[in-house]
Length: 314
Image (tube, rainbow, N blue to C red; front, side, top):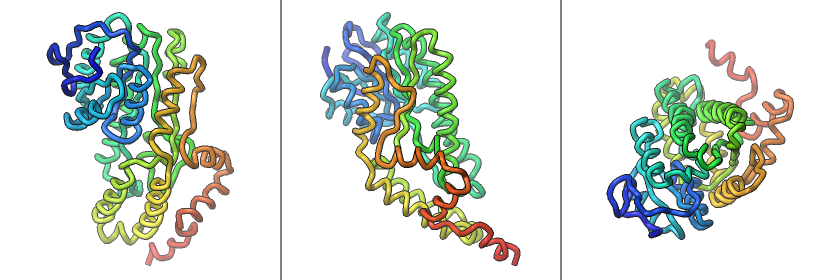
């Protein structure tokens, strides 16, 4: 079979059709335009999988195909759009037939940094819709195909599902929720031999670093004078530390390698920590709360407890 598709969601036989029987293993990777998703799609294709890689723009799909060392078929998909999810699942079903789907990698996600007091509720809800609701909707759509092949579900979570950071509340909440979904799915799908694996990256160097810098500037503007007076200094100190840490982080390929190992291992672990600082953060997460709080305040340059109480009442 030709290793390249003619465009997102298309083949030589027409939209959403693949009439040539494919003997390869098959995987779906969501959020494959950049970063971890892109690296994972490329890694699996190079290891002999036919990868259905979801993107939101046709040009991203074309770039994936051009760089592929193997079989990649892009699919246009926004994980918050149920109609698009259904079409993507039908496209994959039409191709794999009775062979089923060997792996689903739920990678699509976004991150919001903002004090919880100031985050617009619509922004918080959008974070949860993508990082939690969307992952469940995609998993539900592909589970019949996964059951046919006794496939695996890989959830790209975060070390933030173990340890919370100031001003990352929206992201942390979504990752804790995703962990809960994954652990429940692991129990519920076990009777069919479907393994559910959680990947927990820490500092990973991706395009999201530059996006975080832009988002921080925009957020500070939205805070207004009162919000900046309350949180401006601490928020800037924390995000500057976060940007510096991510910029020195591991390459996305280290996560992709772990995903491939979790899919191909006969006995994968339930959870994989990966990336720079991941194991250290997991150890710190086990400290007593008052000790961990003190360390986080020191590291991020946060004000001491009670230090702003008098200023607030003047």
